[in-house]
Length: 165
Image (cartoon, rainbow, N blue to C red; front, top):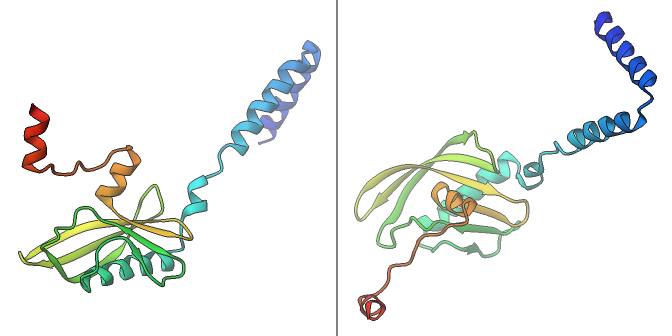
């Protein structure tokens, strides 16, 4: 360790001999920008584990009760659900939150869904972002959002024929 410190002192003495304060200032600026620029901004929008898990649970309870995706009325903080992969004819019978999984944004939870009409078992992930409001996204919707994309709505036959003309 002492040899590293001694080498650093020798290098600083060489810079003094060169008499190049501009170089020293430039190095200090680069170091300070890199240090202060490394703040993880996603932490500002990451809810606590308990808050995130409760938001996913509440979102799935609403679906189980037959309510559509969107804002859940009367919640504090406000919870907003985005789940475009729901089949409107399928109902959520049961769900099980398997636990938190690693993710780059927000809190990510693995969930097992039991659907009926038709019966189906799905394992998926929900991502919770925000502090107030809390946004609950199914993984597929979140990925589309991160790529500035969206699912294209199905056009009626009338619209398709007029578009071809």
